[in-house]
Amino acid sequence: MAASFGNGHASGLVDEGLRTLNRVRVVAMAIGDTATWKGAAPGDDEIDIIARAIRFGILENPVRHWLGGDAQKTALIDGLSIFLPEGERYFIRSLKHYSPKLKDKALAAEINGYSVQEAFHTREHEDYNRALARLGYDVETMEEPVRKTLRSDKIPVFRLAVTCAIEHLTATLSTVTLRNPQFLADAAPAYRRLWMWHALEELEHKAVALDVLDAATIKYSGFKRYMLRTMAFNAVAWTFLMITLRNIRLFAKADGLKTGPRFWLRLVWLLFGMPGYWRKCAPLVLKYYLPGFSPLNKDDDELIRKGRAWLYTEFMTLEAAKSAPHAAESL
Image (cartoon, rainbow, N blue to C red; front, side):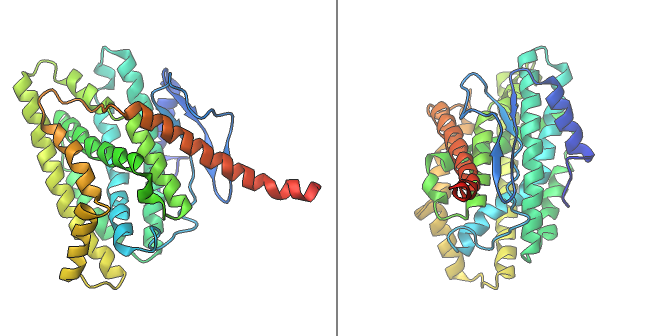
């Protein structure tokens, strides 16, 4: 299942993006047993999209129930990763189809930056899902309906509308995660870094797909564009819910958990009670049905600044820990 950046479709997309980036800086980082961040600043408000080539080492060190030892909380987030490798490739194809046709060169450059970020996400979530398989989860069965659904879309403008819908869901989850970092307070460190990194980058590029949809449907009436956008979202939300619930059962089966009434009642409590993951998402999700919807929120810039600062501090702390033994030896 895993793809190497040395070859394949993801590699070509990354190479193409890197050659043509204008407003995008690529910050290279790596993490195995240690981490490095070469020549990077905590963040630059002048740069909207920063593609970060981080390696999190999850494949080498998979952790079962990595979120506070809680199987259900962990499965809810692991379940998101099941969608992502196929989903990220789908997003890249959807936007790249329109890139040569755009008159707005700045938007074309943002598509390149978006594609590089999504290609790195693909790589890391392929490793993540391979790690799940090593832990005994039936990832192949979980991924099958995702592949089947996304590979059935053949109409470019509908693919683009579906991409916008999925991006709104991921941006919503990312906003809620960055607003509520306590959600990941009990997470294993590598997993917390990965999901904070992913949330940050989703916010950085959250408007790109909708900007492309606006450009691609410029001849549509406002009503026709609204119906395309919202009907695609209805289809995405229903499919996401059905696949998520199906896969929750598969996670529970692998963990030896019975999916009786108590299991589902607790899951509902986690989603809508405390901590209320989906309850906190609901107002942002429903904004998508507003005519003239904008994906931008008042606190986006602040969340991005905080996310960049957190990620930078996290990796600088790892570098300091790496060098500490050598400093001690020289004393």
